[in-house]
Image 1 (cartoon, rainbow, N blue to C red):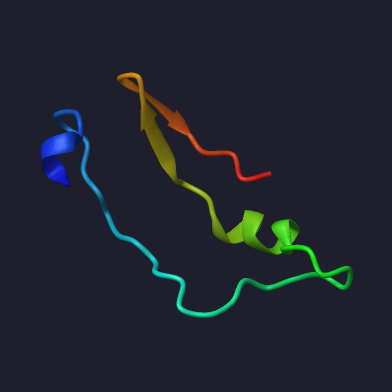
Image 2 (cartoon, rainbow, N blue to C red; image 1 turned 120 degrees about the horizontal axis):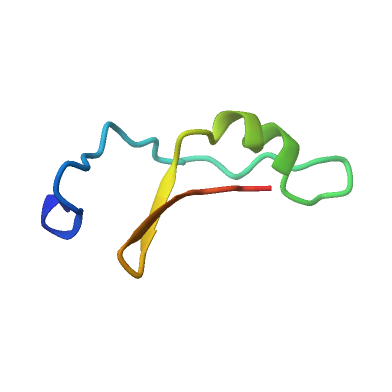
Length: 55
């Protein structure tokens, strides 16, 4: 993975999901719940590094 990252950028960790995603009362994925858990993630596309907004 390090070969694909720009110099100076490193992966600090990851969190595998092993269970089904939490849903709200309507049956949709509970995005509000996960938005508080999913902070500090970045995506790399077209040689640009941007924070990921999950909402």
